[in-house]
Image 1: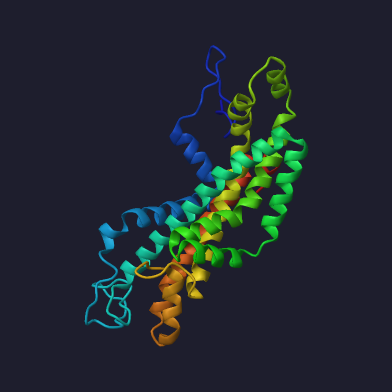
Image 2: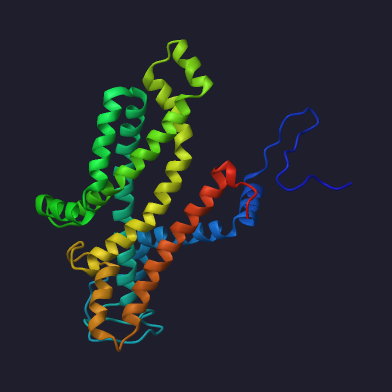
Length: 297
């Protein structure tokens, strides 16, 4: 007698649904979404290095007489023109990119959740006015906004994170609003309104759990975009100032030392892997949470 098909529901002798163990669910997700698992592995690795990199790589600002050394057992990624360990600099660049991206997403998600849900629930003139503000925000050039914030708050990574959070805010508000409108039309939400449930409780208990998956997918994709934006700003000389280490600044410094390819390869490869990991993770989350894509390979 053959066992149940993979993914099929399993019931015990009393007809109670048996939930598979965490290990079995993880194994099934790995089999069904190998690229997503690979993206998750890369993303976790980048976050781990950003959090605990100084314990592994040492101080990226330490100078030495070992100038422009090629990768070796002593210096895994070689050294730069000032004798600084390049592996430590790449790890420090990961710390800046991840900190900046997560800060931007935390600000954007927090504001978008409140703005989008309240706008959809209030409807009427408030919703119309808020959406026109979103249109204005989306039409405003992002680079100009970042430059204005740098002039007002100072040129630091916090102002860049705030600017990127505002840039991404428009798209997140629209996703939250659309998901909220779809959820508010459900029968159980109408029943909750009839029995006198407060708007805050409706939004907290019924709407928020349903808008989480689409917003999570969008945010995961934006993390990769935030890393690219920070790298582009640093490459143009508009990123976080020294002593902050940045992948984009490292690529800018490597242009004058083209005969030492390791100076360009390692920061470029680190940025590519980080963006690839978050994008693969976002695509797999979309496949998992979107019912229309289940079973499509």
